[in-house]
Image (cartoon, rainbow, N blue to C red; front, side, top):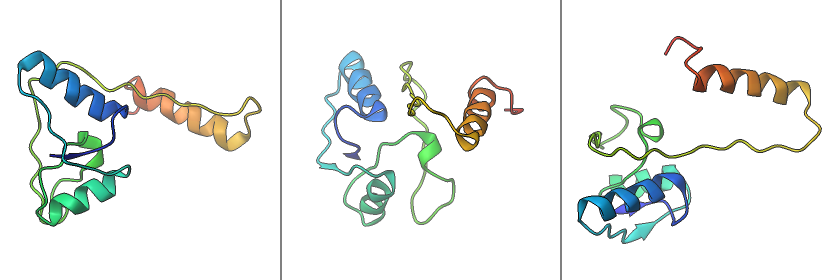
Length: 105
């Protein structure tokens, strides 16, 4: 498999799901950027494991298959300096709406 490094949310979910369900996750290639993980998979070097939001359907030669029997979720965290500016306030409002279903999802 090709994946993100240890400690990244998606990789943690993969490792935990494999530990619970039995198979050992063998990530032979790691890249810190999702785009690099996808590029390695597109070159035929393995199967990429990423969150669905990191892979656009129909993008390039890759096939996207959802892993549906995993109950764990990755946790996203936003962090910013203590003096927010107007752009940051707008981003936070957007994220609150997006992550609480307020954008019509």
